[in-house]
Image (cartoon, rainbow, N blue to C red; front, top):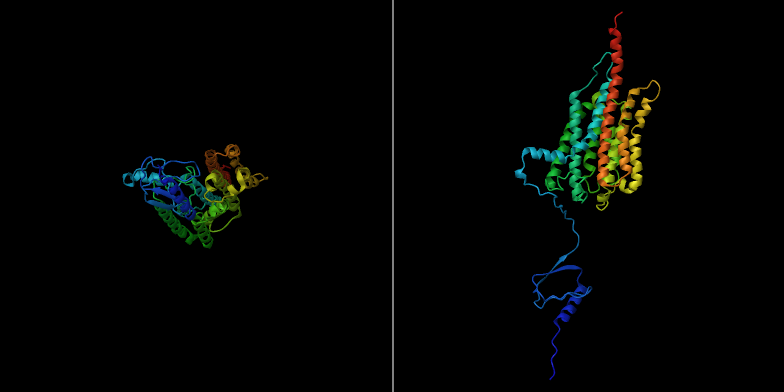
Length: 402
């Protein structure tokens, strides 16, 4: 008695599956339901048998899309309605990264103090100072920098830059605290307010302040507010030098005096170099997160070794203009008190030279911000001493009894 051979369903299914794979591009295959024990697993490289139930097959393309994926926050955030006004203010305050605001605040104060000390004389011992213009200038500049921070966070989020970098962005978007579109809206509002206040100052400052203001506004937006912002074209350091150095310092001086002076330009170079060092360290810290997102920075072009060399040149070079002014005979030697910041300089340089860790570079960046702050304060103290010393000598001379 001859036995009939049972049809091999598995071999038929494997044959049909192989034919299908020859004509269809790679897709993900999912099944609605499969009975347990009906799907034998075979060797690698072979197809997996599908049960005789002939389940419905769904296919999905694996092609990449331009959809922005928001990372899961490290800590689950409370709903917006549960936050108090104090919490909201604290959140936004941290979001604008207040430590970095010193980059724009310091040149405003230095330019204004330089203008004031140059107006001090025996006839005008109090000098000439315009507090209203000073206050408006500070608010306008801070608004523009805050807008640059928020706009930068939004567009970096869209491009996938700093998505998982806890040291880089403010965390408003990355931690799910604020919706991305609200960060952009607040950034644009700050940009508008800064523009209006800047226009108010420019009315009394003349055409030069108007030009400076327009440049500052464009830099605040285009630094990262376009698909290929200035910060993504290895221009971040150059833009930072001109904005946080000559532009704000000279602009603040002109607002107070109405004219230019060579000496304030020399002072602005030092602040510009120190601010550039801060931005350069920021880019060194973010090399690992910027490269996969296609963000090109000077630090990524140079690599760590040359980037360290550039950092040392920037911070040491900041002292050169001041030392050159204070060393010669009969020069204002009080300027040399900025050398009291040398211990802080050594700490910052040694930290940068000894590490490649993002956390350590972040610490060095904060140390460089501290260096710039102390440097500017001591420079302003020197300018005040230089301005008032002749006046005090003159007044004491006339006060002597004869």
